[in-house]
Length: 262
Image (tube, rainbow, N blue to C red; front, top):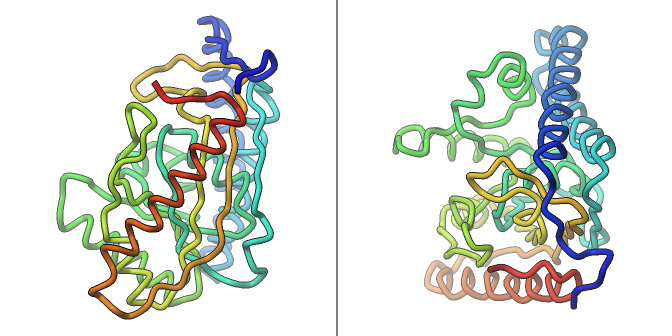
């Protein structure tokens, strides 16, 4: 149900320009500062450096949300994360804002895969490298194989990973079929899955658009962890069961906020 407070309003070009200006400024501030002050840690301890650079990324995300003040982020289910436990987080994917939201709401450090082109951007790419995020070339099977191998190594080292099993952003907000890669990885490494459902980011910034919308309620729901069994024959059914539950949760969030897909 829509209400006046959460009703979507398309921002003016001026508001959109303000957002991207803030994004660029905040990104430069945090990435340049972190590289200048913390990159030396990488020489002595790669894991410690990665944690520091990830915490800077969390500050980056929270600073952008706090500076632009055009979205409100709510999270439910935070109690489903157990302190000290590592997870393979799976999330639906609607917008470039999804990573920003994950950085704000997830209560533990994590690594995620990103387009390798981002790692070539000065300062931003360097920061992502020091944080230990995983570059992947979507058109290269070898690059995807190496990315999965890196994710596997992180899980074996007790790190959490965030993956988007849809493989790409949804154009219309409806959840795409899940690819099995993340689930097989979690199964093989005996790592619990932590489903994360995100609603509202598609309305915040649409795919292939530079315009942003204000007065959008962005919601995140952390579901209960799932430990997959070692029975390969049940994998397809289990993936569909998990996806169905995430779709139901997404529908419930949208019904509350009024952020319905087209």
